[in-house]
Image 1 (cartoon, rainbow, N blue to C red):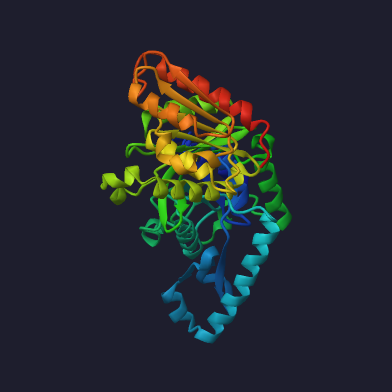
Image 2 (image 1 turned 90 degrees about the vertical axis):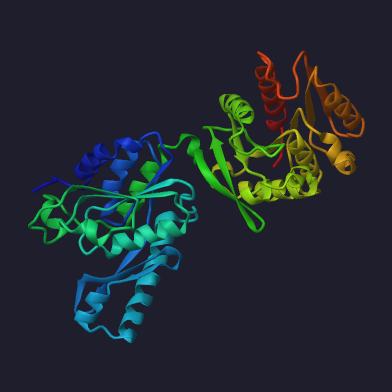
Length: 432
């Protein structure tokens, strides 16, 4: 025997996957037998655990022999050679698929309840089973997570037949297996304890894994794909444990989520227990046209759509939302905050152009902090004019000696302190 049981196999498999620790990983176990293996891997990688629901389509005369598999989101994989050899007629295949689809839906409700699947978009999805036989189930699992937007797919199993990489070539970005014995006949022959599991076992593994998440919140620190109307925009969502709110960054002057200045401020907010969403307001093609950088209505619309997307994420459920705008992004933040149903807890502008939101300024109700470099004279004057039009709680603070980009020693640190205090003071009392 290669393995005492599935948990021991999972621990050994986790050692082979140690290079993934610290990355944005989600571990997906194939129920039922893959859950003990996956749970051990998720614990070792300190990653969230979920199920990847896939159902084998068994040959009528030999149910243990897979002629295909189905997964969530309509994924369907068929083994044409097995279908031909078993002479399975289309009507019989359709009946079997319908039956297995009903069972897949039942398990989704049983295992997750009202909880949505763990998000895999933009992340590394590690699919784990207790072994691979024909490969049809594993293939369907890989295609399911691809359909859900996984940036990278890793298929990891303790044991498989020698030709398993040939069978699954191209389905995953990385294939990991501890043993490929020449005498492979069935997965169970390589376990001393290969007891069958039931639904209660699967639910118990998922509950224990959820208990590793502080305060029951799905803590996030991952690349995401933000849906804003008809476009999809790259972003990064970070939610620390016990976060009191989340701040959406609106970048300016054509920069994006990788802006070093905004990332510096975001890191400071994380230390204060605030989450952040940094995302690209424009697609790569749109960013080529400089006119878009000054299109406040377009940018504000993207920000509004991104906020709606954010509020639908499980990791930020119930949290207050604030806006941090830089340069032209500040105008977008104020414009979006003036929307009647915006429910924005606070706004901070760094070296912003609030004047570009002129018609909307009187309608802003969110407490607003305007931060301007003391040496950025033109922008300082524009901020003073804009402040005069604000009817909400507001404050204008200058950072002595700082220019527009706050590149002077200590300038960006001061911006971070001011933003941190403004958000923490106003988000704690926000009603969402």
